[in-house]
Image 1: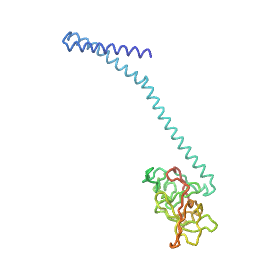
Image 2 (image 1 turned 45 degrees about the vertical axis):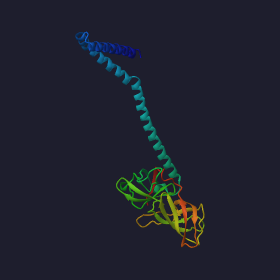
Image 3 (image 1 turned 30 degrees about the horizontal axis):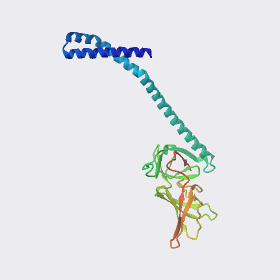
Image 4 (image 1 turned 90 degrees about the horizontal axis):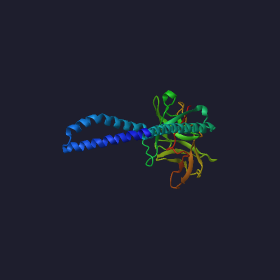
Length: 266
């Protein structure tokens, strides 16, 4: 600290002398002497200035910059740690589920959601970091715990597209968890909406009934196995004049916050 004060004093002394000589040169007094004196002191001024700046770099500002770099590094490490904790939590939750069996599951991270703008829209498809090189095939079901997320609709070597159950292009047979096991067709409506449609008027739909996949796997292993949870019924639309009744279904998943999913390998 003492060394820095000495250099500051020297710097300001040379600065005042320079200003004094400059003022004299403007008046025309001692122009030759001033010119010679300026040449003499200019190297010392330059050295003093550079030394002063070096103390700024390695002094207070330098310490601030070092702390900022350390803080940035720490923030990065904390971010990586939180990601690992989140993935481990998802894996732990999934493997504690009795269905589907963990032995047929392939974990994958969501790396993209085309068209998703928080606060304005909800995801309709997501991109995961597993592809055909990992054994992913078009038509495979994607889950989180025993809840249906959607289906693989495209795949390349390293990435795959998953169409969510809420997507307007999503449609499959389903049944309720009631004793009657009412049959219908789950249809994505877009915007996070799902309905159970094509239900006979004679069947009983009840609020809070679970809606489960009925099972529609083909010989190629494409489709949904039976028993995956689509959601629960939150409202029923039953009109005597209509051919069928329908129900609004709400998933237990928040698709906008999913970061890890699991592919069912048939």
